[in-house]
Length: 494
Figure 1 (cartoon, helix red, strand yellow):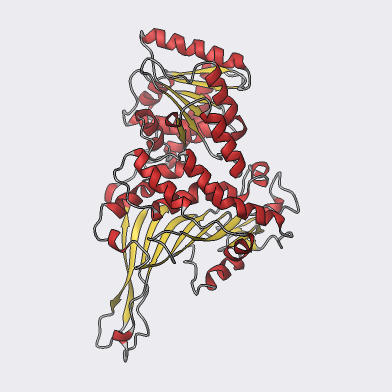
Figure 2 (cartoon, rainbow, N blue to C red):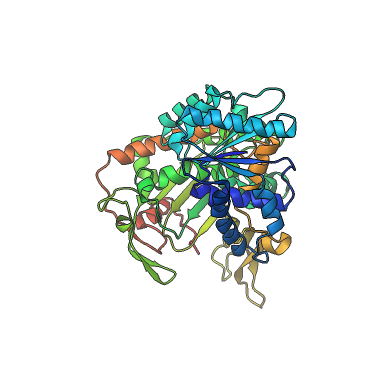
């Protein structure tokens, strides 16, 4: 495994802790080796020490005994070496090629190579081109070469298409693993199992029984130290074409003919391709945006977005986005999908909420019940991963009164959980060649195709009256108005 960006934050916070967890689970081969590549001038020992502190912190925050398993950590770092180099310099790749060749010679055989691009997106295309020019990316002698690419994969439709073209001119689609750590979460993966392995739910998963769907990805954090990045990105670009649309795809996709990677990814791509692409007039009616101002989170005052480091004092960048999507196919015709994502909201929460159509109230005439309570199915991605079902039941007593009942399944209660970054499953899947949870080029471009008209329309409008929601609240009032037009309301973020 070669990690480009080995001295960076992503490697320390997520990639190496995930590898540590895989080592604890004995899922890494005995001959496993890691080469870290970065511009920082570090020795092997200095690199190891820089990683140990963050990995220890990660273990402490989990539900184990809070102690790093020193035997496992020593096993891992004994296989980790560092190479200083400029990613834009061809000599770096020649030095890497020589280093990997030495490792192969020590084994007496060739090896499979996994290249992990834990670098800024501006390096994605050039690193892959250098891998091609140096022959490092060429598969031969039945040994595979795979490249993991982080998000953001493009900043709009044209840049995503250009990046796909640049990468696929060098390596094959089967070698590319576009990673989204959201898809490593157990509850996200369980959406397909829940739908397609349970005869109780699949027959009602359609326009005949479902009234509408709400997908929420809410964060309490602000932009932290990423103000410069966020000023060029915003909530829409940062979250919707990747994280949020993957949740839409898993909720809306048709049953694949098997659980092979291509079969699953083809159905996910079809679901995104079926989303109605809005005209500028429709964008104004089906989307809203917001930006947080000063407020309170957990009883503590926090500053507004415009006061964050590296943010313009009159910034028009959105930190909140809500959309109404229409999926134009047989299953979902007439069923709105409402999606929202934002920073500095009242709670950290990622959830898919499915509201079922109400039954006729005629049976309940001449009773105290005006209408039956709506049935909701709630798929909680984070925190407190699980599934809940809300329905109505008669309250005990001589009169007819209806009470709301909630059946709640929690992963923690049934299966127990171990601390995970979300990357463990994904990295392991790359190693075994299972691309099911990774985005294909057509899936990426389909998402940007939906988002591009929204970006263009928002950019052409006069400046918004930002900030339009306080930190620590549910978001801007205009988001409530978006659903009120259809006589719906958002479920509270709590």
